[in-house]
Image 1: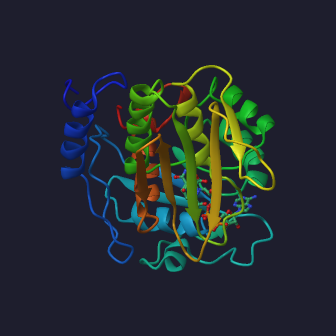
Image 2: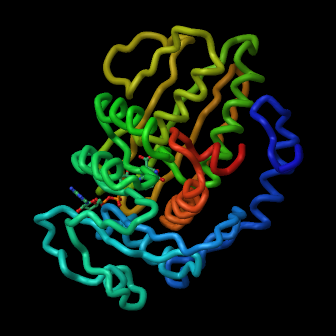
Length: 311
Ligand SMILES: NC(=O)C1=CN([C@@H]2O[C@H](COP(=O)(O)OP(=O)(O)OC[C@H]3O[C@@H](n4cnc5c(N)ncnc54)[C@H](O)[C@@H]3O)[C@@H](O)[C@H]2O)C=CC1
Ligand SMILES: O=C(O)C1=N[C@H](C(=O)O)C[C@H](O)C1
């Protein structure tokens, strides 16, 4: 990519805005009822890529099955679920509202997958990592709320297999992460001080809080601040005045919200609020599919969506 289409983080916001528009103009608008394969990334694959979906019966797993099955470069070869799942044996395509794929939900690990796309639960992650290593399979891992030990295990696994790990596979979210880092760099020494708060909103079924995405926003922003930044989760009681070196997190759980993050940069006299919100889950599913295609040709290593999106 040339400089305009692939700004580095230290480049000015103007370059990033140009890149956002050029990227979005090449992206596919996907609706849940008419799945369309993502086109915002080039790939040079000459062969069909075999995809296994881990957590295939879940909210995200179904959308990955639906979008992957509509992609001529992909074949869904396995739909993996837990061994006591009531839906085992049902066809993954039927379950996802697309055509029958002759891929039954199964707890057996497939032998013919090139890449596993995981949207499951932390309790499922250890086996997923172990099986991907055992079968020499690339792994796109989207599950949030992992323990520190699981993160360590994932880092070790990346020495053996290629892994893309990101708490949000969304193009818009990852772009917004870059933008908020640039804003932080510009405002960190503003007279009067800068207060940064992260508000995330998700559906009532979400099991972890704050979201993995909110935590990553906080880590990336903290990278641009002084050492000693404190991460503060909620406020209650006689908290005293807000300290300068805090990033605040607030998790809202409401209805069927598929994911929304607001980063507030508060100053004396004015503020900036950056909001990025999903309308449906296909931004995450198509991002994970793009990551799977990208990863298929990579050596062992730990990658993220900034790598995939060349940001
Ligand atoms: N990185 C990203 O872009 C995104 C990440 N997520 C994360 O993905 C995860 C899943 O989200 P949802 O689909 O909404 O949850 P969900 O609860 O609808 O789906 C999880 C699925 O995993 C299955 N599962 C449980 N144990 C399993 C096992 N041992 N083996 C295989 N499958 C197993 C469950 O039966 C269920 O079908 C969450 O951690 C969520 O935070 C969600 C959306 C986007
Ligand atoms: O559980 C979800 O739904 C989502 N989880 C991810 C997270 O925790 O960051 C990503 C997205 O916001 C949706």
